[in-house]
Image 1 (cartoon, one colour):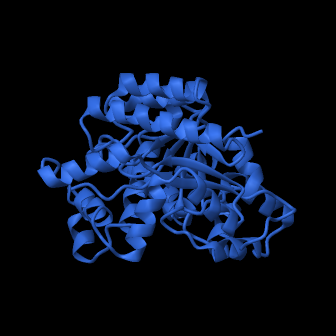
Image 2: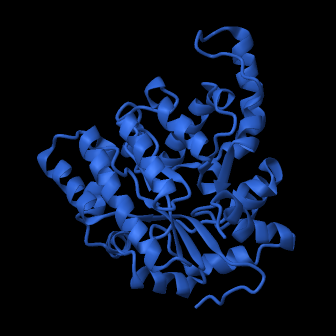
Length: 347
């Protein structure tokens, strides 16, 4: 049992769930063979059928928005979870089905938040490939359900948020003043094969590569020049992007000067500017001071938040590891509590 910390409340900002209907929908896609995404089959073919202790713990934890989850939070000393629909969310379904399942998932999560108002806060699930309905659901989830962010589980059947069809979703997020949490997904069919061959398609590497690519596409496409107040959140200490800041700035500028790619245009600012001003990072799954401290140093203390990655990485001892970080007390309070309160507008 990890004791509560008197200096700050621990707010975990990338915690996952899904619904029975979405789970059943995944199973149908797998059984019918109509959705031939090898990443999806690798991920949910395993979690929906494996009898391993890890798979069962995760599968059961995703389904629970009640006493079991609260008990696990208490054992780990977690005061509040910011909860979102797990990958790939509804993005593997046809647009109409996806929108319907997103509405139902949001209703279920909202009910859990009403039952545990001091412990749970929700992110809105949407179907980005049904943009008009996605915008309607974002407005309902934020204005009526009290959700404080939007979850997009990275690529949408091989498409990315910088593409023109998704502009209404980005515009709505900026107008509603809520961040988009860009959560990992398995790499799409166009890039996954080398990852699958080495067992690297999941959280060990493929997730981070795919999500980092997605975030960079958004930046270099000029999305933040068009929507300067729009905010994103990415996990796992920034999917390694903070460690590439120097190289990203240099090579993007060099590529623009070279005129090698007709679609690569100059931005108003260096790539690093957008990562420092339009992107928050969480440490989900990375209870390691060197990585957390580096992100604070290069992005700013105000840009880095705590996350556990429950139930995928439920290791209560990692909370104590983060508690014991030798960083200034004010920076630690911002990491565990202060930044999350500001970003998610928590009272």
